[in-house]
Length: 515
Image (cartoon, rainbow, N blue to C red; front, top):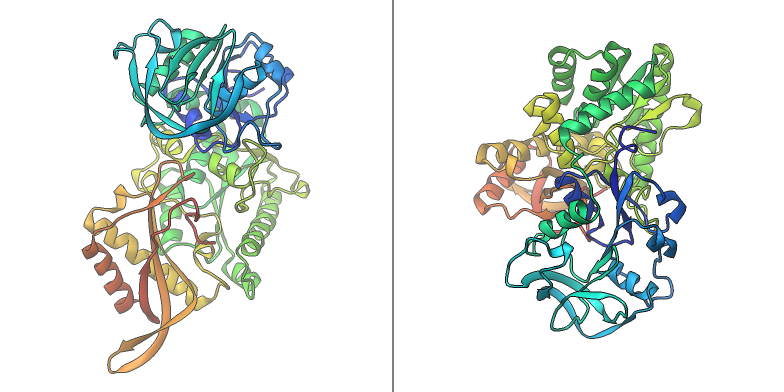
């Protein structure tokens, strides 16, 4: 059992709702260790004195859909406090014999909730018994015999209820649009579940280092460095636990950002004093990528080569473990966590890519963290701000930003154009305001005029997004003068580019990286 799993905790059962992960985040922010589990986890697995509360998430399904997700009904008999949110509340009502039907009017957006101020869930809230809350549902709990109705709206007669220590709310307390939503969750965690504050970044660092010490024992660990915040945080955590029995392997795959090799070797080898082995594998990667056009195939080629290189280096070092910087969104997008109904959006070379032939055991110390939590851990560990504030970079490197086959020309254009994007954002003060910014290049050509001649050239697409945890993202509305400077520099300084475009798609429906 790990240090984290031995903590008192609250679990969120994921029914596929868009806010499932946000519930986890809000509870952690309130100081309680919280984790996400699939909706169909057996009740027996939740019989633990360590589990202080269970939250049932929302869902895109109706309770009346034939394939709607259902939890083990025995969960409601465990004598553990339960909070159902939206679909979760409807499911509780359905399992308790209530009437859940299609609403005459759907409720999406803000609604006024009238609540019972004497209820433990609304304790300490003296807003005249009224709150603005965020609704997102079509079905309505029409009737629930045996329940205390502790809240209603004009369209939802049972917008909040209690049955013993089981609560349900039709609205979403986890979103910031709900007034006093954090207070409602606080009341559930501390007043109803009796949780103690046990989740801080400091406690995570302390417990994780102890956990690594226990897991590794006298063994040796290798860790792949990419220069990004995830691998950096992983490496420093492991180093704090076992010292020089960690060796970091930095592979130049030819798909790095401009100047990245030099910066990584200086930061980790010279500044942080970690043991770093450098492997120049540029030709191997680029040769293997020739003719490969499909994005998923490119990821698999890169992942396989990384594994082969790690196998060779690990044998030289006689390593026992491989440490990886897998974070929670990686596992979600690879359909390795959550509801079990998730599709595989894309594979990650550091997720599930460790074949048994390596003979290495896996360490993933930040696997349950979101990106902004990783940054907070990195700050606690004293990792340089140049790494903490650096924009995320995909595992497959620039290959994820090249549409179609990876060629030397497209690599050059992508690398130089991305560097210009970052330089201009830093110059204009926008770099640290956004989540990620880069350039994309594909096979499309567009006619331009250079000098007095018409010439075909590449189209470069600039992508700048804002996000918090990478599960969702929106394009950044950059000022026109900043976009103009970026466009002018790319077309003037990057040979072979005639057009520059700006991507204005959000995630969803798009992903952040194009490939």
